Length: 140
Image (cartoon, rainbow, N blue to C red; front, side, top):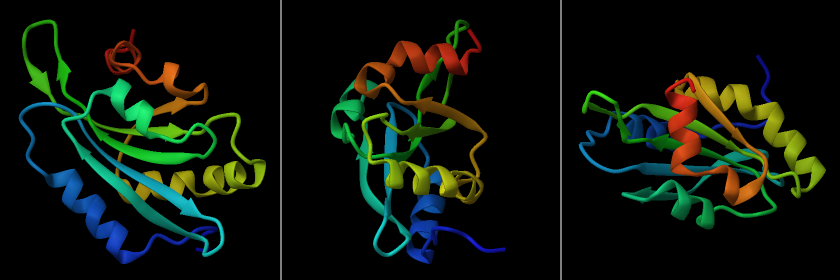
């Protein structure tokens, strides 16, 4: 099968390590971008114990990113879980060519990261808040 954008083994290793890290508090994120010139995905940064609002401030306003988020979800009965969520950060102000490349490689990235929960964010920082993520994950 051909892919528009390659996922290097080093990134696959980072995704796997991130996925299986044991967490007992807070949110963690791994941010990935598409390198348009090389047609590969690259890890941009990892964050430990970052709020969704702070994460939104770290993400570019005009460039798409894939964000693998280990999210601390507090349930109404007091339990905590840490679902993995794929944030598809695709601001509408991004360059069309880059957005197209990002969109074409999305399912490949989702499959490689092995994440079923996806949240699309197109309206920038105001779209990435704890309330919005909670509502999406709780099915509200």
